Image (tube, rainbow, N blue to C red):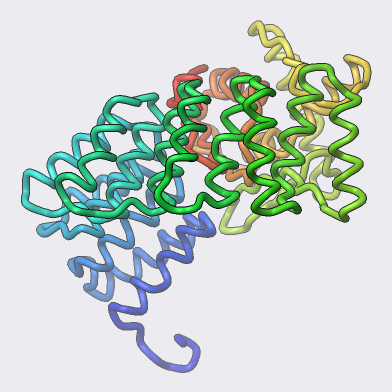
Amino acid sequence: MLMAGFKPVEVSFSSIMPACAHLTTLNLGKQLHGYIFRAGFDDNMFIASSLVDMYAKCGNIKSAKRIFEKMEIHDTVAWTAMIMGSALHGQAQEAIFLFEKMEMEGIKPNCVAFIAVLTACSHAGLVDIAWRYFRSMTQKYRIVPALEHYAAVADVLGRAGRLEEAYDFICSMHIKPTAGVWSTLLSACRVHKNIEVAKKVAQEIFIINPDYTGAYVLLANMYSKAGRFKEAVKYRVKMRKKGMPKKPACSWVEVKSNIHAFVSGDTSHPQYGRIIAALEDLSDRMKQEGYVPDTNEVLQDIDEEQKIYLLNSHSERLAIVFGVISTPAGSTIRVTKNLRMCVDCHAATKIMSKIVKREIIVRDNSRFHHFSDGKCSCGDYW
């Protein structure tokens, strides 16, 4: 559009900012923010709301909060973007405060705002508060819960280990649950190592969608982790017969406006030699800090040395180390991952942040983890 000689208008930016948020391209988002400022569009409420959403989803919650606080008027979209941003960054109390402040200012929360506040409860284990909000949807605001609200409550219960309660809750839904709603509970079964409930949940999923790949993968992984390799193989064989590919773990990091993607075990990056050398050096320093690899996270029946090698080649570690060697000392490293971060990589990244003296922000498929000085913002609850 610019090359064709057309000047962007306000709606151009409120349309393109969500694309930056979805792709987590922070540098491009910042460039567009600069253009918005120079064009004098920064006081537009819709553009400001989209900037709040973009910065929050790209891992820069501080900038999102700054823009939100500068806005003279907050509509439901702005409030919801800030509440969801706070929720995804592990700031549950802040999200709840914002939700209640929105109500106090006379802004009626919509269905998306309730998804945001229920997400906040989920990431902090606030079961009772989540129930209160869920009930207030119908009792106070006459909002009929949608699938997303049921999934959010099931997630709250599942993360808190109340698996049977979550199972009964999904069964009692007034609308037919999808495979996606059930898979929320299946993921919680894996975290809490409850194979019996997982089998029940998987059966519900297979009735709805016999080819739901995620259920086969999660069950196979659970059996492998429990040392029941024969049962794990059974599900992997079923996947092969059905021609169901397993989604590979992938992580990407933005360096100098370029996106660098890594797959677990990937050796194709042009700087792979430098990355491995830096990773080996960092691994030695991590051991001195007391790091012990959690080989239970490796789900193959192989020897310990091979398991350690596989852990070191996880995609987020390659992305983090590349970020360390490619950016100035002290700068923040932002990594996005398409799957849930494993327990061992989570523990390793905490120690890495302490050694390299950097803030490392990892966005996995459910939330942001802010690692700094050996700690994570999630408090090991994710």
